[in-house]
Length: 538
Image (cartoon, rainbow, N blue to C red; front, side, top):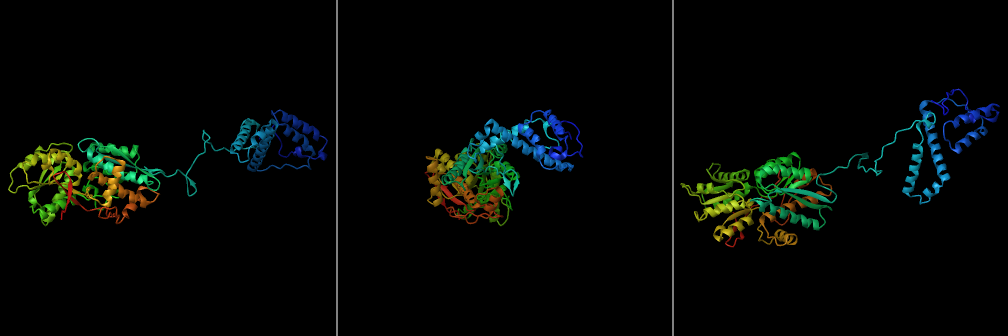
């Protein structure tokens, strides 16, 4: 390596800087020569020159032995750092800056940072070729350009990014719903959303769930499967929801369900009784509150045959021509087959197209002469199509018994029929998956109280009551789950939920092999005033 004067130096030469006075008369000459060489380097502090001049008075000569390269570099590096620090402090004292920096309280991090910065600037300002021989510098870690500290979550002592759960923050849990908010079935989407938000608002007003507020993001699929792929993608990718609750419809579920399952996304409390959400064994991330269409249609078939004394051949099905209608029709077939000891019975199916009121073909089929006349029609429709069908057939078949599954939208159906006149509404039966909204159970009273507080002026409704029940069950599971929330843990909590009493008159229970909370079906029938009265279906 080069000495400060760029001349080669013998490793065997004694270190004359530390030689005693008796080392030779030529000592002074060599010292002056060394001092002259030092002056060629550039600027040196006065303290360093004084040290060089005083070295002849030091103790006996110490012979310098060559050290291993690594150790020599380390010692030289340490010497340089100490010298640089001392030089910086001396410079600050001379310039009068030192008192102003340390004049504040010793705990002041700002002043210490300023001092550190000055030291760093002083060291960095020296040119590379001014470093003493044998000094090796270590690279320093880069800091953010802003100078801001870096925050890293640590797990088990290792630095790694903090885990994040989709749709969950310290202050919020975000859920989504894909439903019709425009089009012929918009009342269904509007009311299911209303009920969910009513329950969420009650929970939020009481501090939320373990300190987190519940939020619902609603997107409009118009009750069209072609739009559902887009709405589900929006909820998952853009809105980053934790899971979905209250999705409306069977044909839309045909698209939404696989999307959710592929992403291990909670699919809770869908507003449909279709069998595709009730596999055996159940899909891990799908939980249903309500009874199935098979259970609803079985209840009404038993009522018509055993209570009203009809023959199975006297029952027809008016159904939407899609997966929803197929599910309802399959339920009727299964119930009648069970009553006939497993024998198949030909059942008349009357179809109409989804999101239309075109029921003329269905009416024409019903009018065809038959050996055994049709005396009851089980409907698997939406409310406007059902009202149109009743309107066009009531006068043709005055004694016809009309029944419908709960998805129809009970309140909307009653309103449509009462616009036509009391004779169209009177006697129409609708199976329900929640208690009568005209009742006075604790659940219904709490639901009405929430509506009055958060949505004043909005009338109670079977669909919004179902949304309220869906959300109430979910909230109970979230409370039991604890503050550490993720999908897998919540699934485990739901599967361990037994005999939850929310005032339904029947407990809510799930298990690893049972993902439908309730199997009860309630019967209701419209009176001449358009109000639903409870009836016994047994």
